[in-house]
Each structure stands twice: as structure tokens, then as C-alpha cells.
Image 1 (cartoon, rainbow, N blue to C red):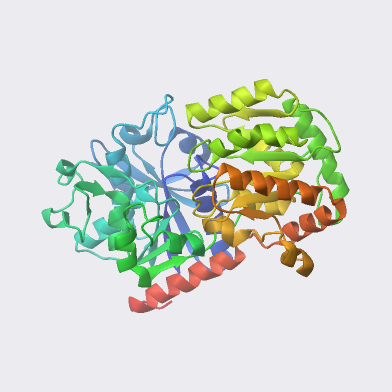
Image 2 (tube, rainbow, N blue to C red):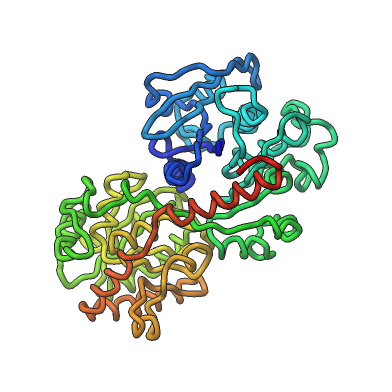
Length: 484
């Protein structure tokens, strides 16, 4: 089976969030199941710098304003197709925005170009790789099913995966022709979305299957409260909506062999973990205290992630003897709250703004608990890493957080299956009570170590999810009349 995966970011070549982790790890897990994956991604400068030897396999003489070509290459264990289009991607800044965090004004054409290139490959333009299935990730790949539908050429089955329904890719309607879409695509059954061209909406409407990254999120997005105005469409297509949990790359996230840690450890050598807590405190300037539980947050600083709730309850956490280490960036107002908290509570609250991959690993390996108070969360990867590293997750009972963390309530403790703490609703009061429960667990160190071992025994790998994706691909191929 040949699969074309289409994503706007791929770890470790370029990353702004969890999408990159999935796009980088899932192909390797699928390879173990006998699926030959090519990952198509844009040729950003940081991607081009990592390619090394690359073969030009398909010329695209004109692609939304200039010439482009597809390069076949291997990097970081991935088989890649890179869209080299300097007029669209060779620029400083991030994948979606400039250094000032302003969206690139031509994003509509940048990601239409990615979709156009994917459709061209799907139609068989490069004989070296003719995919049986095309797997599209998030709004940046949303026009792939549209081009494959409206071109009238070879149309392999398509899967549209929603990593976060809040990001939809909406653009002015007068660009329909400029995007190479026919007039009849302008329909509620096509790309039209509340008077705009909806990239994600097009993918959800025109793909053969829709997946999200957790079963609970798949249910939530079909409701008015969680559907971000797409719930009606998703309810109409509910028969083809599936939730498949994300995993993490266990070779990247391995506490027994992680070079970012001060001391490697595993569930049988938990006492070694203490060296990482000491190292994390030293790195951030926190007081070194064996009695103080160290909480951490590694997250985009946004309303969605509930970071404002953490800022609100921080005085209570500190008053109860806790500490907080933070790593992240985002909303300026939330960043300001964390700066103020670090200033007001020296030695108790500290962190860094931005993203630092080694520090993220040290925080997972050194913190006692990880806070994830998201108001909605399609899956979440940080709590999966926390489980693997024995940092007990304290999570809102939403989406993939609800699916991956077993609340250490009285019954779960009696059965020996708790792995963290859940809370609902997602409010400051509920989070504060969850911290009270967490501190009570911390005060029973024998129980805490048992919960850590439970967490570290959780299967957070891609093995199970990869098999689910393979079954989905096989079903699509059979329905299309192709041998699976």
C-alpha cells in the first residue's frame, strides 16, 4: 500500500505544534505495518537546509505566481516529497507568519499550492510514486480533496484529519478562479463556507473519510458547543467520522535514553528521577526543596489551553507549598501574567518564553506533575509525554485528555489503575480543587510512586493507532475497488 501524507509541518524538519509531531512519527509507525509513506511538505528554508541530496522528480512550471518543482529526498528517517517554490516558501519567519507573528498575506496561495501539488501526485503525475490513498492534515491540506474532486482525473481515496477544528483557513470568495477551482465548486456542497472559501470545510465536505485525533473529540465536534460552526456538516457526515488517538514517538520520548535529561531513568529506577527535578530547578532558578511538589506547564499560551486559569490560581498553588515551571509563548496578555507571577514569587514560579525542545524534555523528566487545563483539546501530546516520563498529568476532562488520563479517584486507586487527575468544568475553581486533590496524593509518597508507575506503563506509542489507520486505508481501497 502506498500512502501520500500531506502536512504543512513535519518534525524534526519544522515544528510549531503537535501536527508536526504526528506528521513525523505516524509514517514510521505505518512503515512497520507495511505501508509505504511519502510525506509532502513545503520547502521552507529550515526544511531545505535539512534535505541533503534530493532528486527533482516533477516540474510544476507555474504554481500560483512562479515556477516550482517536487524534490524526492530522505531526512530524519522519512521519505519526503518537498515542494520547492521559492516565491511561496523561501522567506524568514515561521511557516504561517512572519517574525512579528502576522500571518503571511499570501497564505491562501501558499497552501493552495501544497494542495495542488498533492493532487497532482495523487493523479499519477510522478510514475515513481502513485499513491493508493492520500492523507491530508488540517486546513493547510484541505483543498486536496477539492482539486481531486473537480479535476475529473484519477482520484485516489482521501482521508482528512482534523488536528484542531478551531483553525479553518477562510479566504475571500473572489479568489475562487485564481485558486483554479471551477464555478460549481462555489456551493455549500463544495468549498463555500459562510460566504468565504473554506479550506478545512472543503476537506471535510469532499474527503472520503474524516478522522480526528481522539474518540472524545470526534464526538465533541459533532455538537454545537464543540463544532466551531462545522457541527452541522459533521453530523451529516457522521458515518465517516472516526476518532483515532495520537501516539508519541517512543524513541524521541524515552526517559531511559533521553540525552536532554540530567539522569536517565525508568519505572524500575524511579529514584534517579530526582536528579532531573534538581537540574530543572537549577536551570530556572527555583528553590531546591524535596518537600515542595514541582508542577510544570509546557504549552502554547492561549485561551484554548487554559493558561489564564493557571495564572489565576497560582497564588493558591504557591501558598500551599507548590512550585511552577513554565515553558511556552503566545498571547501577550497571558505571557504578561506569567512574567508577573515569576516576579512576585521568586524561587517558586519561573520559566522561559518560547519553545526549547531539550528543556521540554527536562521538564517532563523533572516535574512531579504537568498541568493541562485546556478548554478544548483534540488530543494533546504533552500529557502523553508526561505519562511516559512519570509526571502525573492534571487535565481538564475534554477531548483526548479525557481519553488518555485515568483519574486517580477512590475507585481507580482501589483498582490500581489511576494515572493522573481529571477535572471538570474547565474553570479556575475546578482547577484549584484538582490541585488540592493532587497535593493530597503527593502527601502519600508510596501512592504517588504507584501512580507514577501506572502512568509510565501506559501504552502511548503509535502501534495501536497505526493499525487503526491501516484498517481505515484498507477499507477505503476496497471500496474503491483497489487491492488492499
